[in-house]
Image 1 (cartoon, helix red, strand yellow):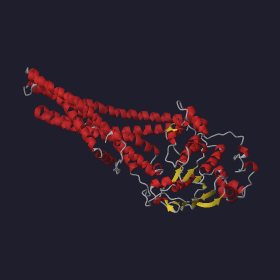
Image 2 (cartoon, helix red, strand yellow):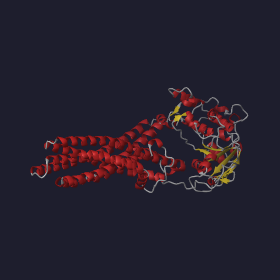
Image 3 (cartoon, one colour):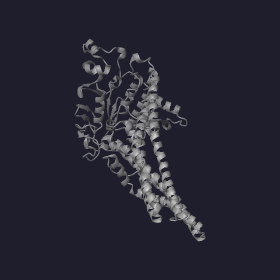
Image 4 (cartoon, helix red, strand yellow):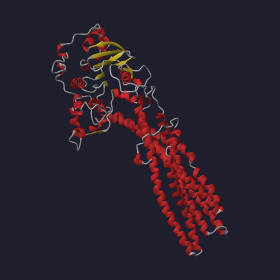
Length: 617
């Protein structure tokens, strides 16, 4: 696999039983790249370590005044230098390719798992952990996969050098063969402590980053309540904790770095002292002493990879453990489906609650419990995260359809939709029927002011469709983000659209116009809106009231508001004292507050003077 061939057509089925097993699986799936990196690494390291022998031969040739041997040695050194350059170049290319392809494979697996699990993912794993795994952890895992081949080449080279020195000069070769393993393994006992300190630092840095993100996201609210100083103090304390943890971590790594310099230096001193003694006794020549001395100096280069692989494994093992935990998650329901053919049509029925949404109708659902509304929306989308009786579409259980078919038949927009960064044109480029134009969807969602805001904030875009939306739409208000998400759902134009509180962040004037636009644009399609807004409820063909998870009443909004006190309490936010005071009897609606669909101005008469104000948080 080369970088230009990414993404993988099939990233495979990972071994997610544990972090080390996942690392092993990634390595096995890149045997070709690992072997190429190993061969180039052997060429590079062997050529580097061959230089001391060439130097020793050259010195001995000069001592013996042999011009022929000196010229031959010069040619060998030129050959080694060429091999070093070629080997290093292609080793780097092969190693980086292994890094990128391993990271890409893991990111594809994580993306597929996120799409497979849907909303169940964030219920079982924190969203921040998913982001951490798909960014920083993927990089650390790729580092280990890339370092394995270089470490193997370095280890084989060190073994070859030790054997060569034993054969070339046994008296000094024994010293080197004993000293090199000690130098290579001496720092390993310190790595677990250094890694644990680094983990503490990353954990504290993550908390500080999370606190900073929350502060930035809620800055307008904090300013409104005067809470900036409070959160600033919290972040200051968190940043100081990060600093202290970083200092403790740096101390340990400085000790490891010092040992990496000290121990090879001590070995070199021992070799020189022993070599000088042997040379004075006449047991070795000057050229042999120079060769062994140079070999000990040069072999420090491949020895560094022993510490690197230990560091890479220490850092990547917890990262791989987190990735394996995410990849091992499974849905509690079968996603393959047993039904062939296209998606069915007809009424949408939930056996668990008794809710029935007629085909081609506009049904509003009122739930007193927001969490129950979220679970209902998941069930209506098919393949819910929790096991239970399947929702029926046209009498066909949705769990008999594959997950892709169910999502095509029923589109669910939850109460906190996410806007991805990019242009507005890219945001609205979703799988769609082609019947609803983007302009019509934006108009129905009342996005005119959003388009103006995007153009004003863009530096080089006169067309709103080419204006860029920042990450999660943070430059927009809550109501603007909500309306863009609604427009995106309308462009998709599914056969069944389920909306969970689609207008909770907009003002009453805009909400009334959205209700009209939604009803008009979804004419002939099945639409289910989970809401407690009277403006949306009044325009629904049928309103269904759920109490404690089951259908308690159905009818028109105005009928239910007078006949069902529990419904009225949810919609009007009445307290129990207010219900008792009214005798559970709906008071007649004053004329100036009645909603008359036939009136050209659908808003409440008493609200006409109010300014259009959106909640911005």
